[in-house]
Length: 325
Image 1 (cartoon, rainbow, N blue to C red):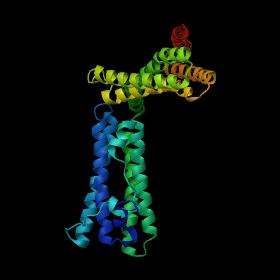
Image 2 (cartoon, rainbow, N blue to C red):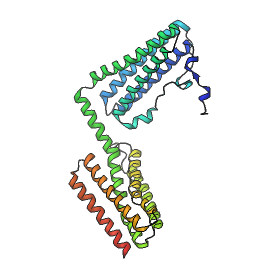
Image 3 (tube, rainbow, N blue to C red):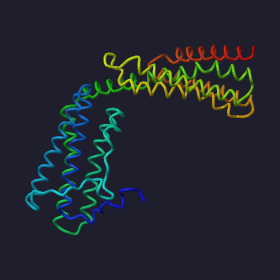
């Protein structure tokens, strides 16, 4: 049994006071999440930040009304019960997990938060026989549905078409600078720079296991080097390229992937079979690099293909000639 699950309460076992306390805690948590989103977005996307500020204020107002109702019915002492204490209650993803996924993903997460709450309260009300509890849960479901309407109204106020386009362009640019550009540099370095040592070793030894080990070492070493170099080269404060840690991971991981792509075929025992498969992988890698350059960096496709394929062919030729010498 998963630790902690045995100690969760079933929703059907909660009293009306506990249901009300749970609703109060949930509204408080959601308001805090919306304020966190607003704080994260304020510098780059002020209009979207204003939307989340407004949604947080709505959560505060609903929480205040729920507290007033609790005080009238049960007094000032609110039981301590939260989402994680109730079996089957909807969960919220951690803010740190969502914040790195972009503006559109944050908006989708907020919309899902409201839908989850509305569905839960509606389903709970349908299963409740007590009239007062049914009314309470129905009111909560209506409040969550109202949150969705409020979000739409706030977006209409703060996010006109021009603002949306501006924020979308800014989000795309930040994505390219933080993830695509360093990742592409890493993929190019890993795919191209490891060609020479891998194929030099392959043709010099015709030993697939030795070739694989050299490829593994070259790929991992290049990935570590590129990752630290990218992270240390620019803190992103002036250039606006974003977190050096994110860029370092993007560059280091893609460098390693680029090298391992044509190192793994040498796990095949037959030398020529492994070499043919490795060459096919190299071809796919180079075309993928050209496509990414064209898609995200707006490099003309023909120019990207010429640069990448020519460079890769020259490095491969150098490695094969040295290994055969």
